[in-house]
Image (cartoon, rainbow, N blue to C red; front, top):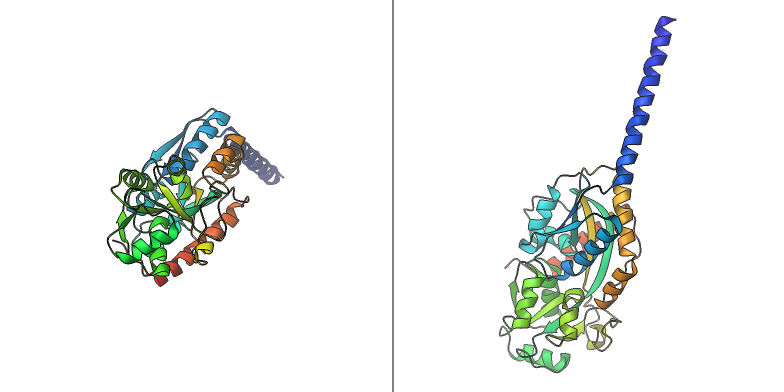
Length: 330
């Protein structure tokens, strides 16, 4: 009888302990964030990722009362920052804003020390932006795409294009363009779209195949000229810029998307709370207006699992593109 009483006492104590632990976990999750959150952006300031990360940071800070600190860690086509993010403390206060570039990197950088599919927890897709061909109007005074293409074909190797780095969507967009148009344009890799775009405006490089988000303000200000947006339809924010399909390039479809991840090992009870706060920020009218101004589509909501499947599909897609285009690290 005494043995049975002791057994019941132990079971009750264990159940009570579990309840306390679960309650503590729930309290932690519902209180997040209790301190500033770091968002690692794997490119230099001023690029496409920044164009979406910084408005998100401002909105998140307004709604939670806690700062979302942007930490720019550029280099090697976004892989330096991704490596840092993969090794960050997985406590819910270190997050990563990556992009399509990180699904291209595995086929371009065979010795990465992280895996975008297994070393991160996918949270959500934040923005989807078409690629745009922009030129410095002084370096390339072509009035339209037809004149531009004639210029490229008449002087192979004379002109160059900047990118956010080898293995980024900017690089692959350029290589695909060369492949589909039979042109040769020299690739100049940078540590991010921001530095490349600054040199494009300054005339140090001739053109870029950029995400529309980072080029939008420069196009509107007349500092660069947009000749084509990738894909089969014109962009609502820039209706006067023709799309690739109407210019005779029906298969030229490159978009730059941006997403959020947490390092592997981030507590499972925090993930829904983190995702909910980020979704709330992204649904704010202020951000919707900024996204529209930058020519971005607001992606349909995806679950963590759906976003993870999307990322895996992009890795496979870009592996095939790298192979077919022959793109290599410069």
